[in-house]
Picture 1: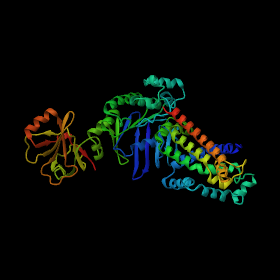
Picture 2 (picture 1 turned 90 degrees about the vertical axis):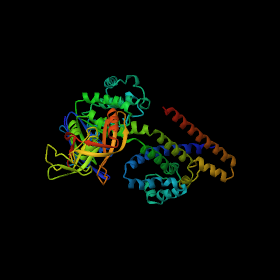
Picture 3 (picture 1 turned 60 degrees about the horizontal axis):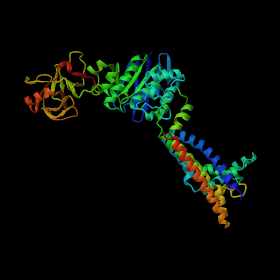
Picture 4 (picture 1 turned 180 degrees about the vertical axis):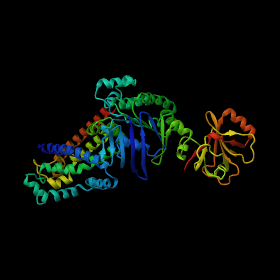
Length: 218
Length: 352
């Protein structure tokens, strides 16, 4: 049996999750500081990928990164091609998973007691220290939840991924596209195996989260 | 040290506009909630930026809008004690104190000074209210501030705890060598802890006096009400120098000092005297009808309305306070009517 889809899915989801972790937190942090009107507008734009059907996101991605489009052609000069490549899958998964990280992190930051940050500043602590050692730990629950949601969403991404990178066994195949492909070609047994693999990964992720939460509870 | 503050900041509906200079003493900012007193502290600490003005500590300019100077809070050496203490929940008591100082020995000495050695490894959520406050005080002092700002540290406490915590804070302010600004909405608390009091209303300082002077002779209506005076009336100066108390329907004796055009007069509830007889139209005497008697812990509070005043206004009601034994006698003697005399020296005169 070819295990490539498992490896491919995990690397796509993991890299997308790391990207989304930092960009989502940065976006949430700066959005929380914006005046109300700007925040509202930005919020709509950043949340859109969550409410749009993934195929629509995939369509937009093709519109921007397609090899015949200006940006796509420009990137191609440097050998970067998001269409029909595994790292195109990272892009698709990241775009779709981003709003989950952004929204949960924003919710966590908004409930953060700004006086803690003020207190840190009057004590002479640097803004970097305050962010990583005071704000982030205080928002840990929300951020952890956002990361898990983003990872799960990236792992299960199908719509945008199939639009952007298609299904090429051994090159772009992920678990979700493989399940569809095998089922479509009447390989019910193969599809079932991959369904079980997916189920196992999801269970393991949830168990890890629960363990982390228990450990962090004081 | 001298802290010189003169700032303006627009905040929604109203503008914070305060100016004061304070030296090595405790200055109280007394005002109702939402009058901008906490915002003033935040501007001094540097966590909020005023729209315009200047904040100078001795010869160090902390903020100057004209020169574009806005020193970050990290460089101001200003200690800030928050209402809820703002202890870092993910750090132990010792780690919290170490945020103020990098020297381990110094942090240890503050643990000792504030009697926190036994709880040094606990997290804020595991501490009692008193321990939390002591941790916050230790953390603030460990950073060796030149100025201390106290933002309503006792407002969330019950009375018993409050007096104990007040003593802790007094221990700190008594030994602190520098300006202290204490924000409060509680006049008694402010009176106990401060030397000078600035009364704030709608973002402005309406009275700034030494505390004894302020409670004896507040200069404005806002200051009078905030210092707890329950009886005030609008007044109008008559040709003979006496004042007509518009809301009480009586005349008040001419004030001895100053011949200013006063707009309000008042007296504190426990200064009024009950009289047996009075001449017709005697100055400073109010005939009134009892409206309600409220039994307080150690006294009776009698609310009454002046007789012969047709129109009742927000100032009409008079409050008279007396000891429990005295009141029982008075009640038997006078039933529902009282004749109150306001001693001349007890009258508070206020300008417009």
